[in-house]
Length: 443
Image (cartoon, rainbow, N blue to C red; front, side, top):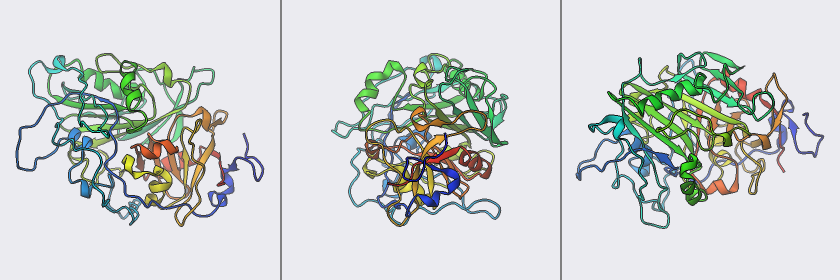
């Protein structure tokens, strides 16, 4: 599918992103703590105390401490002599002058590993209302289990069943053969796309092997493992909750899993995934028709202790990473309103754009441009349009940054929380940059 002529819908990627128009707008609205999506898990209330307390991973995810200082949620590295420098957030990302509209979760619950008798067998899913206000937080399901730690600690796993620092899996749209279950894969050791060793629904592939640790945690007693599942489109058993909060709360999807040494964060785009821990690993049929993306990063335990404090952090293997999370009061597009300026480069963005409210490419203002990808092309298969792709990712035009996200470029999602995980990794950047066959010029 080649690019259309001048004045048509798409511009060929090889023509250069700069041809799309004037520079794009910079982020001018402060981001917040991030809306919370529907999740799974377990809760206990802390004892009352006037002393400041150290937050666990999950409570930091729910409500980072010191709201006035955590408007920009970053996991990133300091500059190094040999690696890319961390982009400075735009100076406009100052703390907001208005009070937060969401009530504090810190005084409601603390989430952590529960040292209870009975281990994982006592786990249960609870529906709780956290804030009795019109702008209440979404209901949250948390799941914490007691289970033996995996050898070497919780980790992302590659397609060969070996621990890996990070990986990306890109499930392809439904094209025969494969019934919408084929995927392409790359990781920290392999910088180019390869066909997945299995289908995405296999427990033997990278995704299935990685999440096997989660389902083992739900059935085995022993040392502590904590896990958090969140999805604005939860498994079918929780559809009523998804409907109640779909329009006003976070558009976020992910998994956090850790033991006492290390853990992983998986950000993805798949609806109704993963299944509840009371079951086993499975792929939802509702996620098979369109493309989907997954980014898994292994972090040391210390990084999870500091989530919500905007720290400099590395993956388990030392790779830098950047994570931005916006609040619904951000009232702007994640990509043109913040991410492009944070990375300091034109962004090419692939997201779900097949409905009302889709945002056009943006070249207004003094900052970097944000250009909508029109067609994606892997080397070994026909190109597919963004209307066949539910994945969310962004790649810088020239800077070596690539991001996988859970948020679309859509007016409705300007009012919802969400964000990307980004890596300044040149082979990863080159792999994603090469997928852009063409993009929409600015109007």
